[in-house]
Image 1 (tube, helix red, strand yellow):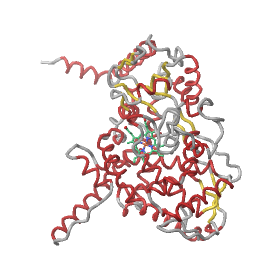
Image 2 (image 1 turned 135 degrees about the vertical axis):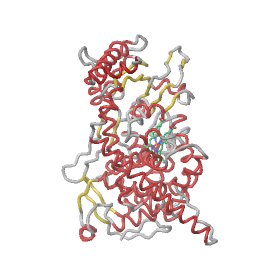
Image 3 (image 1 turned 90 degrees about the vertical axis):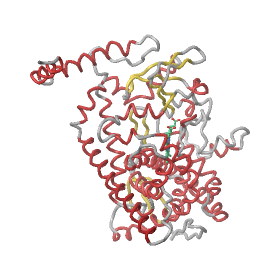
Image 4 (image 1 turned 45 degrees about the horizontal axis):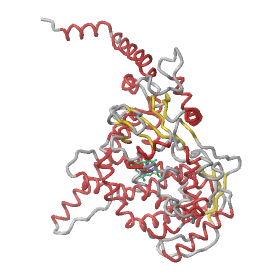
Length: 527
Ligand code: HEM
């Protein structure tokens, strides 16, 4: 006897993909007619009549997210926009106090909904965030003091051996050592940060593993590209579209490579442990993220390789971006660079490389915070998904499942900052002197006026680690190198929707400094 599902199945076979495509078509039309017409909040960039997949509206957002958000905020405090990632509720900063710590607003669920972890190749975006957060809060931040000297000496070695990690032969390096030479800043910095992070994430022996460095850098670049491309398709068609995407194929290969590498590292450690126990020797205690994840997971399910990719995704590119932007911002500002060097010398001579040292680099801190104020990683660093229906004090109802964002208006507001468009490296040094701003003016502090690391319960937990790393690298770069923009280079922030990235193609001229300074504790020695 033929059952109903069998009939449907044979009909499907007979008609090929027609029913699937029709269902998708009906789905798209439903989305078109139902979704944007929600009467509650105005939609300022509704798609045009025949723009069924909202592609044009999404492109417009990709090109001018800032203009659209600004235009909306000039009209009202809460509205909707068609973004590249779907329709989002945009709220003005006046809602921040009320929702910054709201327990029903999740950052991770929003990111997961935008990053397609159900598609093979993009699984790292779906890792258990609680394990990652425990790792950062309970282990990484606590242990970072222990790593400062290791990282400092590693930066020293890296910069001694390679000219800002330019990828070229020793012969060329020797020639480059004292001469001005041109290099693309971002790739060099990204590689340096990847190596330094790797000491802490994968153990010191892995930080020179070329394959691993390739996997993490490749994975981030291609996953960004793949997610950007997928966003332009209706969500239900994305798993099918993904099958034909070159970037997804690369991601699948890199995930497999990551699994092979991380499994190999874990296996080697297990064998070492067994051997040590057999020989009656205490096994080596590992102090890196591979071990910490095992410790904090406490029986929770996770896949080590995917966790490592997740960690690299949140840590390496954000840190490299801040460093690159700061270096581009100070390029050509000779007097400022001299003052920064003097500060480094004074502070390091007195204290060496320690947690307290980093904190004392106030001008450097101000420069970094100002750089981040003018170019944070996003036009909106506060984005959330409502995990429940939420009712705000003024009666505004936010439905469960709504993706929302608050643009960083105040970071560029003349009511908050004098001459907000101008890069003022001394801005936060001066602000520290103003009563009530002593603490909020430091780079690691988050506030509604400066949301470079977000705000509230999901504010970046990795910022303490990132800031120290950035400062250690800057100390070394400042003391070992002279640098300036290469001829014809005018750095331009790269924009894609709300995403802001330092100019990855900006070229700088670099040469070793002649001066000799001698500093304690792995600090900076120029040759
Ligand atoms: C300069 C470097 C960095 C920048 C600019 C940055 C920026 C941010 C921002 C804007 C957020 C969102 C905050 C919010 O929504 O309120 C965030 C979240 C996060 N960051 Fe960072 N980050 C950096 C480095 C790092 C590092 C080094 C790590 C890990 C070691 C890290 C781990 C995370 C995690 C796990 C979250 C999610 C927090 C949560 O869901 O509660 N970040 N970061």
